[in-house]
Length: 187
Image 1 (tube, one colour):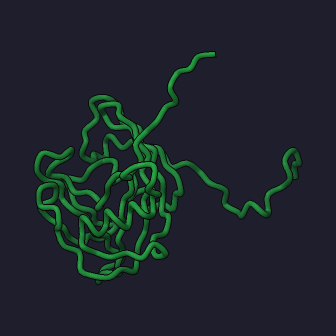
Image 2 (cartoon, helix red, strand yellow; image 1 turned 135 degrees about the vertical axis):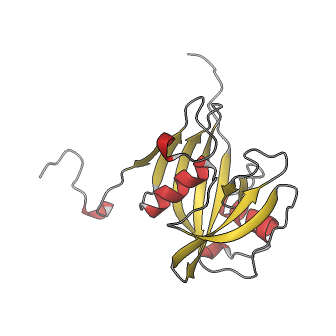
């Protein structure tokens, strides 16, 4: 038996700040800027956990305030979808996407060194160019998936391209677990 280190991946959180627009549901997106990964591409407000002391809901509340100025009560952060992602460069991560429909304040760009624009977009009319990983999370959310895999291949673009869509929603039971048969039983 070997003492090889356990596999570890970064965890990040994504804000699906959702409101009802004149043509249907809209989400808040920000455009990445500066010297950050995927500069010039649209993305959900997001960020990483600050360490083992911080849970994903706390991180979402903190990142939302830091990036948008919006205050979210932790009880208003609802699990939307989890995405296991691998970038074209091979780095993997797990993203927790949270739907928020109640908040205080008006969203605005607060970190100009990493974001140069922010706006509301229809869920069925997302802007381009958009980060493929973010688009995968939004597409999985719109499809009602709870979990998805988005493993890009070397050479895939960072920006979403429908010709190179690597999203794979993971199926979930269509009925509550309490109705499931006991293990080993068949109907």
